[in-house]
Image (tube, rainbow, N blue to C red; front, side):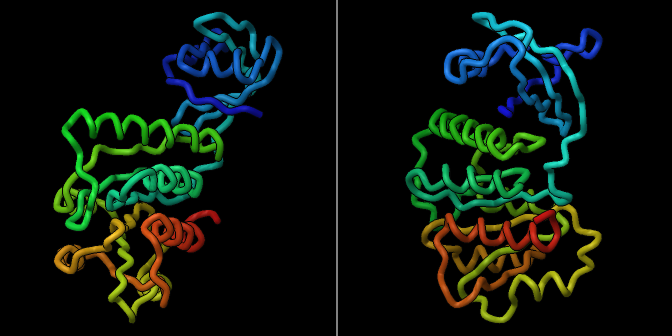
Length: 250
């Protein structure tokens, strides 16, 4: 069943109706060629799902009648923030797509010391964030998430570090860490009380030693991911998978 997200203002519980007015109108009518009486799945982005039948297909909107309403069960019990050192090229696209599928809640692109990408200005950043957010939306549809994970505006390392203080646990894979692994950290904590975590991933050149020291002084745990060096687009997926296995719903 095809899944779409709508704003809560598009849901009319009194009339038991939902009206789609965004870019999904064209996708539903022209690409998927859905028609009256076809069934679709709607999510309000706040963990509520609606099974609906198409009432009418117009040029600018599609009207749906609600046949069933239920709480989404696709969201993990932990909220994960990914602090991703901004990589080159389209690697960020893959990172966003796959971490959304795995259950990340928010993604904060971080400009680190070894970040190579240079933005040409505020508008350039805005354009990239808008594109990244669209990728997150499509991945959320495909994986049937109950929310649309947020991709934030890029920030500095220090600002990201300040942001991470609201997490109960922060994990940072570091190639020079050879003693503590992921399991070691989890076993040393009362993981039953952890529901908000942060994962720190460096860009292609890795994390600068001064950044690691700053993060460690701020309470972030450095870990090893084993004897092999993982690419930036692989490391985050690996830690997120481990996190969801130990604390989430994998």
